[in-house]
Image (tube, rainbow, N blue to C red):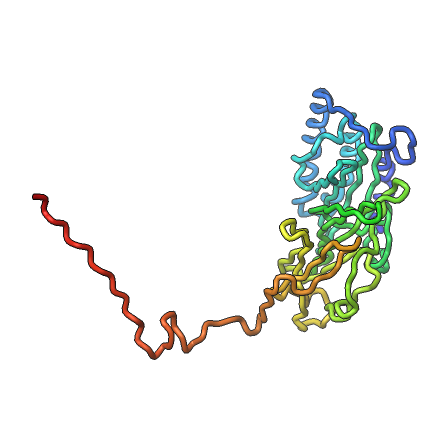
Length: 333
């Protein structure tokens, strides 16, 4: 709760330009060399703060650095043409753009004591005047995140690492792939959906088509209709959830429970070696089971046949291989 109060105190710094009619719509603003130099100087001030946010052993110091970082970052974004400055030397920030560069979305995370994370971010519109939509992490207070539409001020916090753009019935959906540290024992990968209603951002959309059998067999309850998709997994497991452009599908590890802690406890969930997927079809992400057919039973790994060797039956002598000797060189006449 104390972090939410601090965020509300800082909200005016992020809420620059919201509600203005003037300057709405995509307008390219040239970044002059003078303003580029200003942004470079601002970036040099942000870097040490980001280092503290990421590495300091004190929870208080990490959060203090973050709440110093936010207004400095917003002041930098106020510089004309800032949309064209990448801020790519600030290591903790993820920055994603759609194909038309109509906006960009920044996200970052700060570790908290106890193994959880707090997420921060903002959407910057590509306008003549600065227009930001601050992202307020309310993950802990969202009762049913799987089937709920959310707003920037009530956001399921995540660190976004990829974005895929799709269209259906004249509407554009931006599918976001994110990481949520969750807690000390488990992590979460999430597919969220960003779209705009009346020019305002909305998170979540009922565009996930999942059979009832999948929803019933999944290791934890899946609520339908899904507005975002989660994969929970054990903290030390490696899990994939990302778009594969070669096959034009979203691929993710199929998980199973080790039953050590119970079927629906995230710390018991690990990838089983097979992969499921989503394919964009008829305006929805449609679930595909076992897309690569790579299932491995970890209790019974494939082993070579003990009765055979590379030559056939182990009781048979291997067939000899003869190589004709090279002729000896003859003396020249």
